[in-house]
Length: 181
Image 1 (tube, one colour):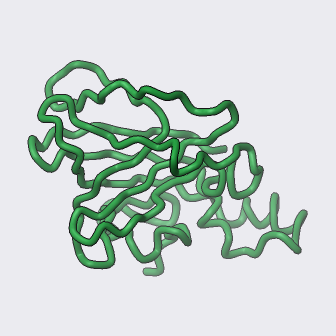
Image 2 (cartoon, rainbow, N blue to C red):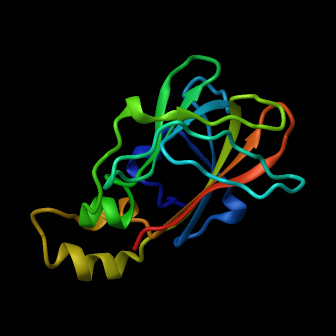
């Protein structure tokens, strides 16, 4: 099966075939070097409930500039290569089709930390709700044929959820859960 993987994730998403179909994509982030552990840079404070199996995150000293979209970058623990996981200004329906946000500068991003054990390293699982291809063609390709092609539907996904798992204490958290349409 040819899985509907967004363009920017094609080389780093290891698809979980049992949880993936034409409308829902699930997989782990895996660096080109084979490593699945990353330092996670992000631009928003993600408060979490103080319960078992939930990561608590440190406070962020800065705030995002109004209009910045959510941005997540994974830095490989092994080779230090940076991978863009999500930029709301460029990916998903809001970014890719509508251009609703501006991209947060990489300088404004901060490392995610687990307050339970203070590590900065996590594995990452993504769940993505893929835009219906026929609907995308009708709403975007037909109206803006110079801007979109039918295959672009994979980049206009409707929802993204990122779950991280602390590499040290193995506590999991749904880090980002964002509707994009």
